[in-house]
Image 1 (cartoon, rainbow, N blue to C red):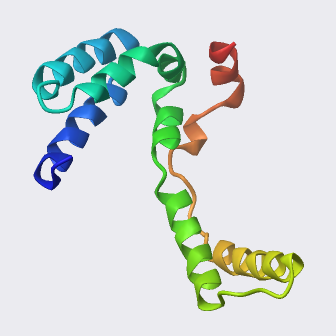
Image 2 (tube, rainbow, N blue to C red):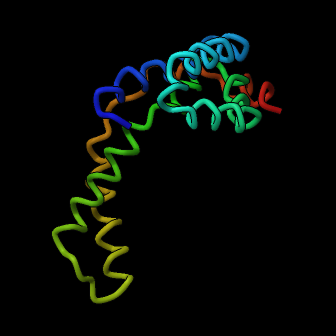
Length: 132
C-alpha cells in the first residue's frame, strides 16, 4: 500500500467499524469498496468474506466496541516489554526471562493510575445478554 494512501484508507475503513449499527456499517463498506477497490480490492473482499464474524462486534454497546478496537494500551505495554528484553539479548534460563518480564510488568502497571472514563457506563450483564 502506498504511504500516501494509508491515512485516507484507514480513515475510510474506520468509518465502517465506528458506525452505530450493522446496516450502516454495510453501507459504509460499500462506500469504501467503491472508493478503494480499484487500487486495493482485497481489503473489502476480505471484510465481506469474514463479515459473519466481524458483525458480532455490533451486538455490543458503543462503549464496549471502542474498548475492542482501541489497542493503544496493549501496544504500549508490549513496546515497554520489548524495550526491557532488547537491552539483554541472551537469558541464561527461561525462568530468568520470565522473572525479568514479571518485574518489568510490575513497574509498568504501577504507572497505570488512570481509569477509563466510560467504564462506569458499561454494565456487564447488559452486553452479555446481547452477545448470547
